[in-house]
Image (tube, rainbow, N blue to C red; front, side, top):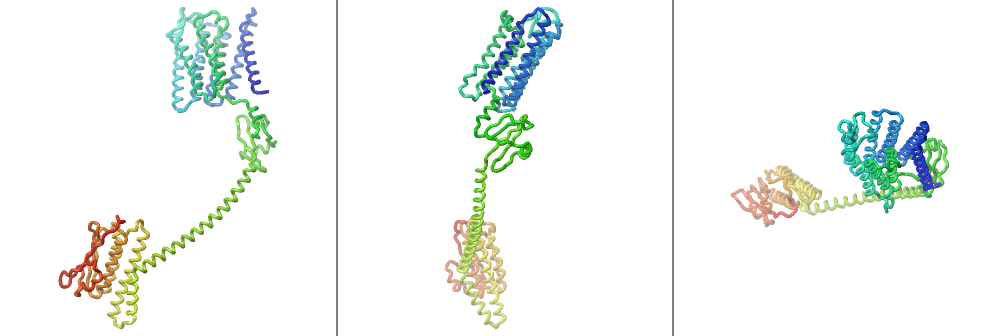
Length: 555
């Protein structure tokens, strides 16, 4: 049987039940027992319908919070009919009927509020804001309910002309009754407006379905307030009329899609040709299936449940628990397995190529490192070729000399040149390992300190002074300062007794100032360096100075 046929059959059963209940109301047998039996049958029909409706809402409404609100509405309708039954068939004194009459207004006020709350939960964006709005709605509803229950004190809902105990057969409406009716109408109207505005259903052709019972409910309330005789005759049972029309409003929202439900499972499974699945209960009895889902033993199903999925011969069977049973479905993953195998082989190949490229890169990096080292060594060798040649000459002379004094002097010169070669190599390596091709004045100070210390072996007192040790300068400027010191030490080692070497920074220039104690004429000895300005200060004191224009690159 198709879903449409099932739905039409259900609505037909509901319609017949309502007509049967209405017929029981119209029957007026003279026998008291028969009249009570007809009324009890009527109550049982309505209670059965609303209990079944609650079960339907609990099973099919999609949104959890909306489902809770709607099932609460169904329970309130059951409560309303229960109170009505107690009023007319158990309590026969005025006070009991009076209390039951006031109890009517608990579901009467709460049902529209819960309907509006369900609509707010459906469109909620800010959960905290929605909860605050619903708390306000429930607070207002609670105040209205309390006003009804305290009506005997203030009589602002109903006014009675006689003395207590008051009866619902003699009363008139007052201002709070109009407030309650307006509140109920506002909640129902607001619910329908919110659901219609926020609906994602295209076309919106059937949205008039919940409007019709709403209009009928409004018309019945107006007729009941004005005590119209035909309303009393045709639809005088307030509980039956209000519950039936309110249920029709919410069911109309479900039918036209304003309230979303999940149904038509069997048709869904039968039409899903690309899905091999089945739904079973907890005992693995099949209820719905589609495609060619294989038959599984209970032991296999238990193993699938514990492991979530089982793979066998390229078919993977998956499982998820559902309310009241299990959902199993199968997937053909043989193509995916083949692709996975291809990807795995490609990954192994790429891993091997990556290792080969890594080794090639390491060899290339090692080769480049060696080339760079050789380049630096060749550059240092070219820049210090004069010192290397002089060192070779001193070594040859050292081997030929027989004088102890001459031997010590030559050995001191060799140490001075060796110190220079070591320190200059360090400066060059520092230059190429630093960022920006720079050296600091501290690097120069350390080099001068070691060279001045080695000059003691040549019986020369040497001292130095370098300004701003932390400042960074272009490496070539620092090297020029150190090369100038070494040239003076080599050229004048035989004629000078002391030397004070000073390097200072003035604006963009490096100023070299040298004070030398020597009895020889230094002007002739230093004629090879026209950039050095030589000036004799007294008989044995000489001043040598020059300026080095700083290149850009230092900071």
